[in-house]
Length: 165
Image (tube, rainbow, N blue to C red):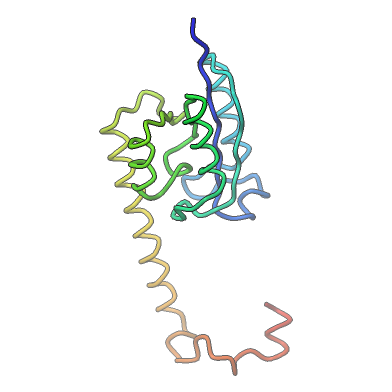
């Protein structure tokens, strides 16, 4: 029987998420991701070549660790293992890049997902990013400081404010 190789990839967006051990929204903590990936790799009899962990926005297409993980998968004919689609990316371009480069990947929470399912999940993840951006802008726009016109004005930063910030 031919040996199967895997590369584990885990990502959080902020250092706070990575340190707290708590997921945010639909995301998973690093500990949860590592455990899910490890369990999947063991249950499916893969040999894990490496585990890549990074703290970067899923919207950032130039993430060093995912780049290294993809390179290793290509070189060793390994499968990229991720806990959820949102931990892999929030942009469709990465999925297209994986497919174009014939890099196999499996989402541990949906291991039987086919290309159509992945495409649908990516559309939903991309939409979620748009919603987050819109909701953030709307929330800032509703703040009293923003409405007062004093938003971002350097005069508003005194020594007391600097101590608090």
